[in-house]
Amino acid sequence: MAPKRATRARTPTNRDDASPGQRSARTKRAKAGAADAAADVSEADAMDASDARDGESPAASPEAKVTRKKSTKSEGGEDSSSVNRRWRDANGNVAAYDGAIVAAVYNDVLGGGRVAPSVNAVQALDAAGYGEKYLALGSRDAEACTTAHALSAIHIVNEKFRQSVDGFLAFEDDVDGFKNVFNSALEAYEGARVVEKTAVVQFAIRAFSSLEKQVIRGVALPLVSLPLWSKLSEGRLKLELSKHEVLSKHWGKMMKKEAKASKKASESGETHVPVSERKEACWLVRMMHDFVTYATDCVANEDAV
Image (cartoon, rainbow, N blue to C red; front, side, top):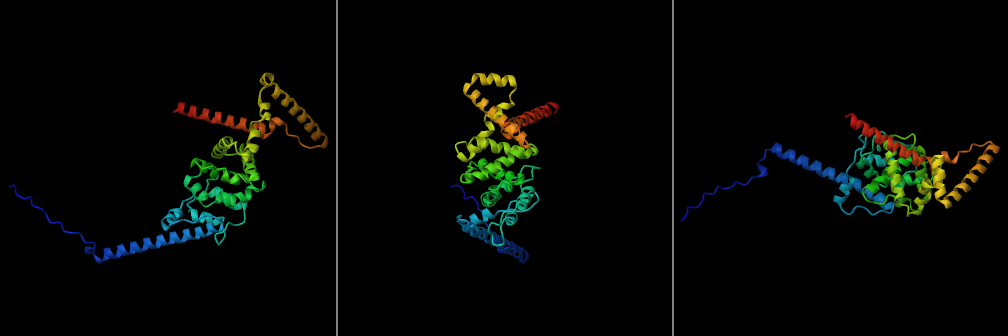
């Protein structure tokens, strides 16, 4: 019979064997952690109360509240909770619209066009309802819809689409809001930075992919309508119109209308903008020119390396 293998008795470890100093340090860390968790839940409770007033459902559990509360640092080191306090009053309600606040958030949190905004910063603003609750107030007013305002809305919409969420749902009952944001972005495009142009192009691509929505169709389709043909060379224009009799008739009517408008403006001393110089004819061409230029530069830089 084989001899039994000797076993070594295990001595249970006891956390109380630690020195009094170590136990005191553990107790302090535990209390600090509990206090932080309580603060997180308390602040999340305040956010839930605000959302309940706005018609939203609060977080279901303390764990969900703490997850929602997790702070996101902006470019300048500002966390999301302090950013949200900029556009809410002391009671947590949405404050009256102020373009200066929108400009400050765009410059301090969304990069101001200097750099692409961080995904976390955009998600934090989106989760707090910055687009639907605050930016929407200014989108309805064409004068209030500045470049900073339009690009702030565009960054949030683009982030929604990145998460496979329809970013245009907020505009379905706000025709003027979408129109003002879109037109403001197009007008600012020529003087915009590369980061801003990229965001506008992404926004336009998603708009043209959502033409089933009437609010988008009425604003986006003019960019690819007959005035765009004015950018063709004279020979190419005649060739294309000769192939499409219906378009040729529409072109003739548009040119007659354009001549009348030019004559009327001249007689009244007003300035007339030719059809070939309007955004309906220029923006898409300018965007494609930018794309080719940037692509060529990238290829040249790679070849140089």
